[in-house]
Image (cartoon, rainbow, N blue to C red; front, side):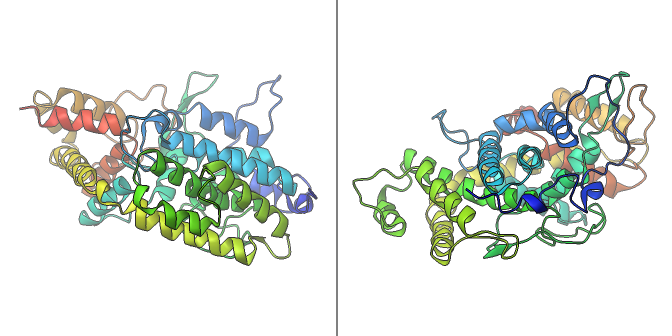
Amino acid sequence: MEQKFIEVSATPSNPNWENMIAREEELYKKANDVRSDFERDYDRILYSNAYRRLKHKTQVFFLPKNDHICTRIEHVNNVDATSYTIAKSLGLNTTLTRAISIAHDIGHSPFGHKGESILNKLATSEGLERFWHERNGLNFVDNIELLTNVNDEEKNLNLTYAVRDGIISHCGEIDEISLKPRTEYVNLETDYLSPNQYAPYTWEGCVVKISDKISYIGRDIEDAISMGILDKNLDKLYDLLGISKLENINNTNIIGDLIYDLCVNSSPEEGLKFSDKMYEKLSLLKEFNYKYIYKHQCMKPSERYFELVLTEIFNTLNSAYDEMNTLNKLLEIRSFYPKVIDSFIKWISCYWNIETDRTNLKNKILYDMNKKSDYSKAIITYISGMTDSYAIETYNDIVKY
């Protein structure tokens, strides 16, 4: 297939190249390092704890007994594969799409999008800014995640602008018939105020944004069929897809058609786009998923449980706030919740301004304990990094008496 986007790809010949590879500070370099900037980003994300925890975070279905049901880490790998295929076909930088893809959901909370809405509810009840996983993902790679460098110092990931932008710009819950990158080089930390406020800065970021939607649409259908959720609505799905009931409905067929249609109909002039027919089908598939999968009655009991779990963890830790005496307050309740308190103190000590041993830490002080809002924000961030199972374990430790 013709590589129609090769002249606008993220390469040194692109006029925005220096902006794309900009970092907050220069990374250390080994004399024998053969990696490009985006390859280094990919590795830094891959080795981070936040990426590793995605394997135990909900995509759609909570704690399925079937090991073949999609988890969050499988989803990001599916996006990686989809965006690679599209980018390679169009002549774009596949290394950049891969780095954005594996990082794009790094800010997701436990329990999927329901967990995200619960943390947002807790945040806004405390007068904090809205919690949204794209913003949280940028916060994690910029401020939270730590890697040990060659000098035995723990520092933040310090990723390139193009990858950071792809993380906060990836929102796939929108319906654009054509997508092009923006031209503005905005401050991602201060200028980005809401999901989908800006298009991605690179064509590669746009590819990941569309690949996110392509990847979850078909995979969620396949999982729902495996779990029997769609038994009563399969006829509707066959009609929507326009295939015989003798054929199998699977993710491969659905995403294959979407990828091919996108590659054929896209151009730098027209943007990344589907044919009218395929765009309509994609929109109808999304409507189908929301009606018959995401809002299915079987989801309700677990969603009520998620709210109980996350709210209780937040309230327990939030009750210990006492300005610069907060550490002592936490230690006072430690006898009741030893695992919870020990884990939280170990985590927050990396980021607060209460005197602790920071010998090897070279990251920013994020939370001023003279501000209640900073403490509450820290708890939200701490909870957002939990896996489903760890959140439940933490909750059980709190309510064991």
